[in-house]
Length: 328
Image (cartoon, rainbow, N blue to C red; front, side, top):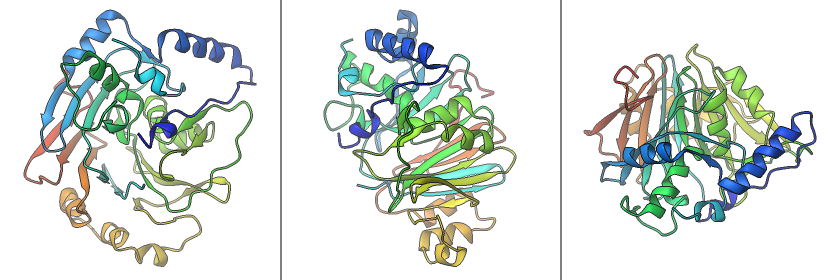
């Protein structure tokens, strides 16, 4: 559970005009957990759990209900009854693609429609949520409850406004000093906040500036963000500040302060940048590594995605924002 510390960062104390309501929400979270579900919503979430592909294995879930997107995810929360990610990402008009390269862990497709937020589909490595190594037991109530928290830990995803986000390991990120009164969230929780609350790249960047990040217990991260209008940006932390880089490709090299010629020296970056009109999956296949766990291409215009698990390129799963709505 090396990443759990990164998922479970403590929140900074509130010291702004909105502090009182936020503190009240925090107290409610302590009393009832950070998942805000009625018994009916719990039952609907549980009934949606299914095995999609045995290769990872890959599961799917539609989360029903609300959640506290800013509260830390702790061992205590996960136990309530009832290293770098070497990835490759690209954006081109209408498409956002990524390989997630990491350990052979189970993964999950998560559909979410938070109250007052944007609907989204995302992918999660659920090994960080489980109490023991190996695939979860969908018949075990405790495993099912842990899996419900996958909604709070997306590794990449797309929302109904055509905003897509994905993370990758950064070699030498340096986070800014903590800002008193600002909420601190983990490197994956920030993606949940972006999917829920941002519609465009500028909105996503502005939202990221409102939070302190904590990478404790996991690799340092940077992010590729893209939207339906064709805008994209890399967000990376270096020299104690948040840096926004105008680029549409991301691997595991430092982007801040580097010229394009230096970036092109990275073989995977070069293949992505010189991919031209190559089919999206052919491009991802060309930069796949032995430990590529999933490859996904989000269609930012149609609101759909195509997913390949464990490099089984001839087995493509089609995803929609809502599993229950064929129109997406």
